[in-house]
Length: 473
Image (cartoon, rainbow, N blue to C red; front, side):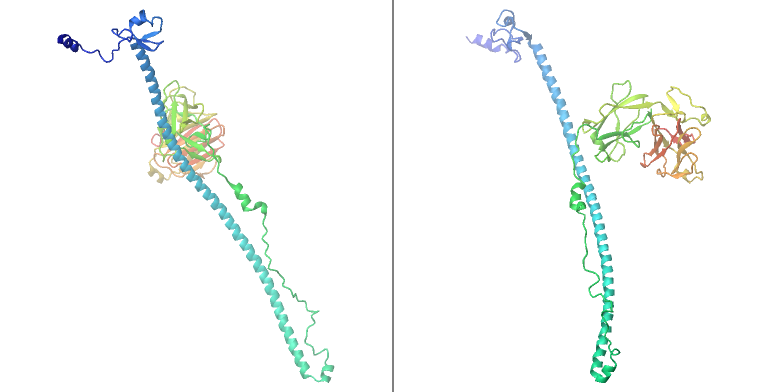
């Protein structure tokens, strides 16, 4: 009797993952009835209660369910990542709000202090006016008082003389000297002003329509300019005009800045850590990475194009796209410094991969290029006033900069706002032929100068054309 029990105990148990059919306990359940959501065996499917139901093998059902769960998991992970990013951006924006609030408080203090200074100046002016009026009145009263005092002394002497004469003269003397004795003045003939010539009235006349309490309430207020449209931000090229893009040169790194514009059109550089940039070259589906600037840099990001054609730039601030449609940015062929022996060759239109910088002729549009100063600084001590020059020329006249001076055609030197140079300085050139204007910007010193009245056709100008003095990268 014990042997069967022993043999039964020695039979291994089925794996835990194997499940038997509830209706056919000896059959392994291999299917999922999609109609009843029950786990069933082959017998149930073929001739049992689930014969006409929809079913799937447990493996396929498991794979399908696993895939659905995995997709949901992946989606949740993405949202988790996005949530973490949102927390970061919200935190950064919180810092920006606190910084802007501190800046606004400084602006308020400046505004109020300025108006306090104005009121103090008004206080001082009114006090001066009072002092002038006081001195004038006091002087006039003093003169009147001196006149009355002299009259008083003269009258007192006449009274004393007359009293003495009355006491000493006889009746005969008094009668015979009548008309000659009296020292008393005839007040009808003496012009004296008995009342004070001026009063103590000082009138302070106030224009109530300009009263401070009426002005202060309208002078300034704090407003919330929050909106998500992105039009408060501007993408520009470093040293160029706000919101304007210039055609650039291949293999020359371009510098961009993202500015925030407030209600008074004041521009403030957006924190680099709030900005995300995507650049797509022509014919390339892959978005290119950019070099982000640092807090101490004037630019927000930079990018060195390696292909010719129209690139697109998309910028987000704190997770919100500020550019709407991607911004087109045209890149033309790279340039080189022409051999001086070929400098007089007439420019020809061509489509080579490279062209000489001074052979690039422009007649319309906006164009930019860069020139790096490689001249050693010891050459500053040179007696040559025109050690080197940069700018634009039409072949006969030039608009140029040289060692702290700016020059117009047929005009003497003018002191430039780009003062001094150092070896390694990168000069950024922005030529706007719609405005007939050239802008040169020194990236190191952040100095900028402008030339107006440019005529076309026009081309870049460097002198001398030497790779020892200038570089293009």
